[in-house]
Image (cartoon, rainbow, N blue to C red; front, side, top):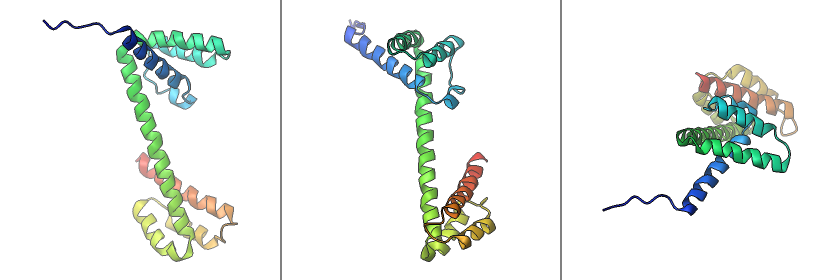
Length: 166
């Protein structure tokens, strides 16, 4: 005689609040991420309207409306949550890779560590133009040489991007 109890009023409110937070996250996404969102036409239209709404009360009302549309389709909510989790992970991976490249650049620009760092760069980034990198490293004149410092990072970044795109 196990009766399935319907969700309590508090549980319903918590679930609605979670969907509203999801809606806010979607509204705050950068424009470039919006194109890859898995949204139905109705939700995409409502999200576009929400993003264009400027007044505080108007925006809050539009957010509630968009949240209501999301609550009607639990499968869509789960798909969007998974998408946002993947985007978050992608951003973390991108940040981690940038920090690794910055650290590699620091070692490349440090005279005593340069040889070892060059070998590491060649092993990590096989598409790196070693001749171009050597040219910029030989021309590097210390911390005040911002141009060479940036160019070394650009070379590392482009090789890393080429490696991740293939």
